[in-house]
Length: 68
Image 1 (cartoon, rainbow, N blue to C red):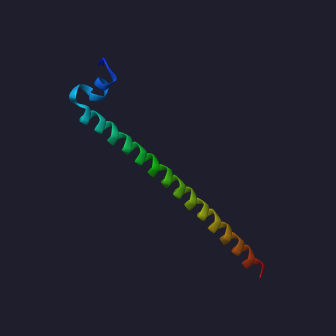
Image 2 (spheres, rainbow, N blue to C red):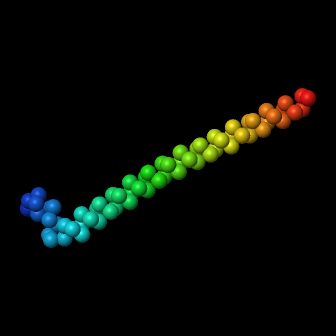
Image 3 (cartoon, rainbow, N blue to C red):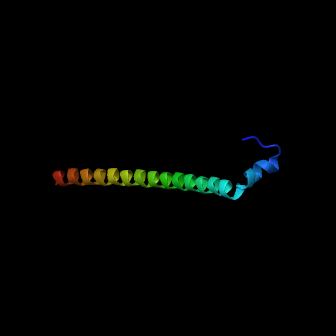
């Protein structure tokens, strides 16, 4: 679609409310999805690190138990 002026582009042929709200909702959803993915990734890495630390403490206690 061809627009003569920038204001025509913003008006989107009379459908600006629909077009720009669709862009806004899409942008919001994409940002929310990105934020959720990043936060879940950090939580997963934290959980894995806690499991590794727990297993290391368990192994150290097992070694200590065998020396007594």
